Image (cartoon, rainbow, N blue to C red):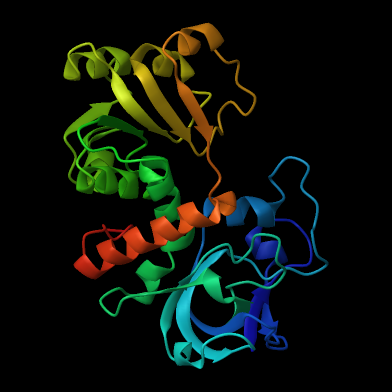
Length: 298
């Protein structure tokens, strides 16, 4: 099969190689997927470049990219043969694995290949594994948000854009922060937009909520936004944070958050518990079939 791989960390134009390698061999409980689209995420780029703290090559050679979509061409023992020919999207392809979706084929456990509705393109399917599932977990992974006010920071990002629409589909009022008008337009339909470069975010949130604050924050940069978070999180509110790039070891304002009974959830999509993931997959499938989710790049 054709594949792209790297044998050491570095810039893409220096370390990536395109060529031929042996196709993967199916194991028990696995499916063989012919990949039609491979999703590239920031985590994939950081891993390939060696930018993660303490990064070491987990394998001598790595075919990158966690996410993808394609068609099941073969199944291993203990997998229903009826799945052959099924369109699927892939999750956790690169998590602790060597050969992943930047190749014509991938073999992986059958439950990591999720049914992709016919009305959804392979390119859109390749965005479900990390961006869409992260957004779903941050918004709905621990319970409903109907009737709540949810703040999605960085609403023009792929996770943020998904999170905005998922929260609105789930019955929440949504506020988002962006850096300007173009980003606001890309964020898509939303109840309130705050330009964090021009506005006082905390003051605007409290004005919008009548002084109550927000019940949930879907947070793209936990450490950088803590000073605002402690002011705007409502009592018994939740912060679901999936990144903290600007301040990787932030100082926590413990008592201001404790006296609001704040729940902090440091979210990594790779380690969702199976029951939560199955709920997320079912909800994403339903929304995809309805055509309700945004296309990330438009």
